[in-house]
Every structure is written in C-alpha cells, then in structure tokens.
Image 1 (cartoon, rainbow, N blue to C red):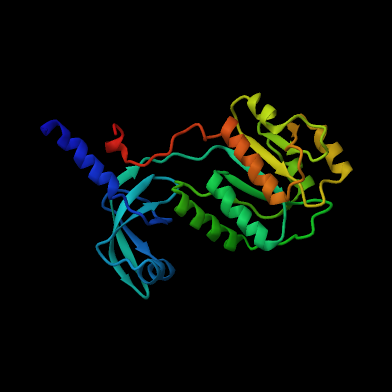
Image 2 (tube, helix red, strand yellow):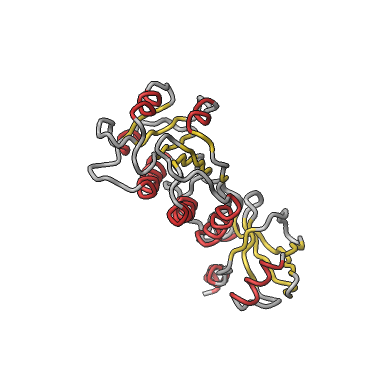
Length: 270
C-alpha cells in the first residue's frame, strides 16, 4: 500500500491543476511577483469570482506555465505570486497562415480558431479581389490571447499588419515553403502535398471569397517555394478553407503528432 502513496499524491496534484489560465508579459520564475492590470483584476475578481489565495496558471510564451497564487485584487489591479512550474516552454509548430482579408465577424472567428489549431503567425494580405482592407490588430491580439488561454497553448501567434500580397511575396523567405490553396481543381490534394514535405518552416495561403485572379495564380505557380494544393471537391468559404488547410498541415507536418500535456515536469511519469 505504501508504494501507491506517491502516485496518489501526484494524482491529487494533477486534479488540482488551475482551471483559469492567464497570459502575462512579465518574466516568470518561482517566487516572482507578477503585477496584474485593472482589466485582468476585473476579469479574475468580478467575472471568474476568484479571490486572494486562489491559484491560477500563468504563461508568457517564453518561460513555460507556472502556478500563480493571487495575492491582491482590487479595482486598480492586483498581483500574483508565481510558484512551481507546471509545464516547461514548448513552442508551436513553425506554421504561418497567410490569408486574404474577410469581413470582421468571420475574421475574428478565424483568428480565434487558428490560434487554437496552433498557427505561429497570422498574416493578412490584400489581393486583387479583396474587399476589406483594414483590421484592428489590438482587437485581434486580444482574441488570440483569450484563445491561447482557453486552449492551454503556451505561446501566442504573431499577428501581422495587413500587407499587399505582391509585397509579401517579394520579401518571402526562400526557405519557407508556401502551400497555395488552389481552388481551380488542378492541384494535388493537400494531404498528398503535406505528406511529401520535408521538415522545415511552412505556410499556407488562402485566397479571398471571389478566388485569386488568374494573373495572381500564374505568378504564384512560377515561384520555386510555392506548392499548389487542392482542398477537395466542395467550394469552401475563405475561413473554412483556412482552418481545413491548417488542420491537415498540422496533422502531417506540424505539432499534432505531440500528445497533450496535462501535468508538470514532476508528474511526467504518470
């Protein structure tokens, strides 16, 4: 019976893992005091009904995830004390999503879901048939932060400013392969493309609702780092195509081969 006690203790520790996660900009280490802003304190105190002494999880995209005990909460802000490390830092797959802009409600949904799937960078572009040309980067960053907190992601995606597609391609890093999601029906299926890719930086490109102009497709197909791929027999909305492509690339060439981590380093034997 005595041999089971350490395992039972570990199971109790796992069951008590904080349910609330909070992204912070400050460095994290055992014993560090983390300042909380007024908005963060409001959410923890008034929305989640937490109080000093409660434990949350803290992450910053650099130092892993730490248990943090709330020390103070008031209208002006608060603080939390970082305690033990729950998970060491592990980055997301090096996978960019390059997409022609869509209208705001669907754009915000796309950013949320692409963050959950694990895109490392979200790069909005304008094309010849793009209708919307402006975004609120701060708003999208807040959506991505909330999605990372909810999905137990340890980092945040980079959200770029809008750039015309020709300007992006002109500055494209040659070592990053670009999967062109081609709606013409002439490209190999995306699963076949993904399965043949060697390891390395990757991106996928999604066109606007009206599709790429023929001149755009011709120019893209001539580039050595571009690999056209089809997304099946149905016509997909831009945001649906983006999430479908990301999922396939994550499964074949991304980090979906890794298991979900639910315990800290000390509990790795469970």
